[in-house]
Length: 248
Ligand code: BV8
Ligand code: ZN
Image (tube, rainbow, N blue to C red; front, side, top):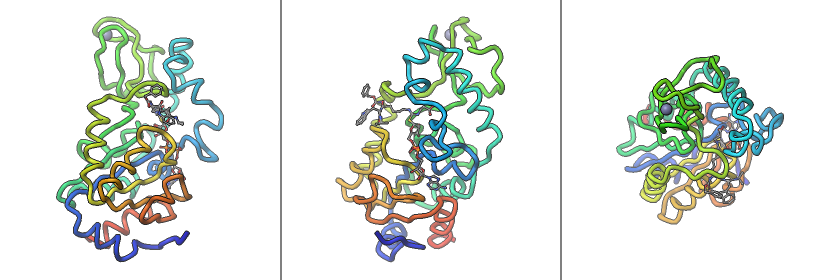
């Protein structure tokens, strides 16, 4: 598999003239900001197991333990800043006629980098949802006190407003992502292991509708065989060069 130091001509051309571009990001785009990924050698789940923490069953069994994990992650994310990859995608959002950023990440770094209206497939670590009244609220307190936090409106227990394994994504949010993927001239997949569904199926929706698929990752993934181009290397290296090269 060839590794490109830059986009090959046909992909550059497609991106240069693209009316509609969609980008799907995963934990890899936040790695250079210091946010641990899920499955890498330093991955979050090296020391934990997803079924122990990121599931409704775990939360029902031990809300305190699940909240301690999220409180620890919130503290880590609060200390992180967007990197050059996040900033490059925010710049693309201004340069491309119709641009949509879809993210699996819950760290909120795309918003912080200036991307407006990112499609947050799996929710946001800075939002809570009340088990009592259902209210979704922004809460940036770190550390959270008390744990588990309670609803200021009804006193009910709060949960992270995040999609756990075995939970369905918000149909409106998933529907928007699938519609945008289906309309894209170019679909970029950046920093994701492409193993979590239904997010991992978006590239297929785009390809079936004729989009050019450009993958950026430090290693090959299950998507690589089906991508038109895979740029092997950090998102913080490739994305600024692409934006500089096309719209500098
Ligand atoms: C659902 C929130 C209906 C939690 C997360 C179909 C087939 C197989 C399985 C399923 C399927 N449909 C449903 C499933 C089950 C499950 C699933 O997909 N399991 C997988 C593991 C097999 N999916 C679900 O449960 C989804 N729900 O489908 O509802 C339903 C209902 C009941 C029963 C069945 C179906 C819900 C999925 C959402 C789960 N929540 N997160 C939290 O964050 O606390 S998913 C979690 O994984 C994160 O959100 C993360 O974003 C996501 C994907 O991981 P990545 O972002 O890709 O991160 P990862 O570490 O894996 O990879 C990082 C990548 O970056 C690597 O490739 C690395 O090489 C690269 N990288 C590193 N550094 C850099 C870099 N790249 C570029 N530059 C760098 N510097
Ligand atoms: Zn409430």
